[in-house]
Length: 152
Image 1 (cartoon, rainbow, N blue to C red):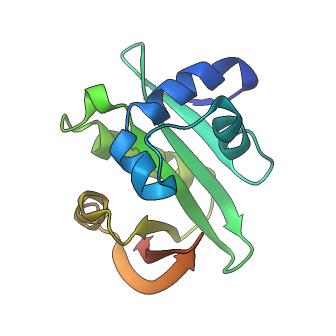
Image 2 (cartoon, rainbow, N blue to C red):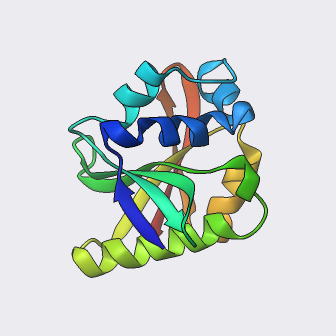
């Protein structure tokens, strides 16, 4: 599993992965696709580290990571999205576990947090199966989000 930082040169690949998931885009922003400007704004910023995920020579997903959320001083996964062509094949779990190993070995964090849109039942089940536990409800961009945490 290779994690490559997203750069301006890789934005087209990034947009292809994001737009391969129209149902998630509708949940998040009410539209089935995102523009190159939206993708650039989300993944080329100074707040988070955004990675393309490469497996067996193919780009299969994206993970967005915030090392320190100033609201709670914890690391957060902002997004894990797998290209639609690779859904239901175990890639999401492999990607997360590989990323977890990476952040545990490179830092002294004891846990990681993430938020899941209330209506994203599939994602809630996915994260709970990986050991994340619900701890609070929050609001983000006018939507209800469940906050989850996994201790290492």
